[in-house]
Image (cartoon, rainbow, N blue to C red; front, side, top):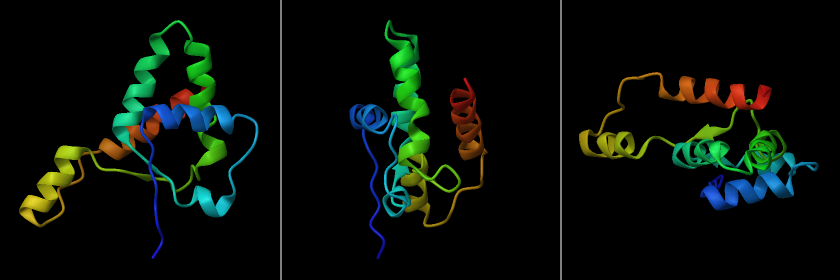
Length: 108
């Protein structure tokens, strides 16, 4: 079984600092999931005084995840709804929109 990991916002930013110039091993990159809540929190921190530092940490995501196939955790209420109704919810485009937003930050 492939074990996966995701990080809260503090560790997300710490990973961006640690791996700003160096890359995590590819086999470990494959195990990282991204939390949409952590992404939203990091994006909100782009409005603070040290926004340049936050942007560099966010852009370093390419060094500690596999950006071609990193998993995105479901939004919490979607995960609960799937558990409750025992069937997948229709695709509402959330993952695609999150991917677009990350790509904008990476291109900045």
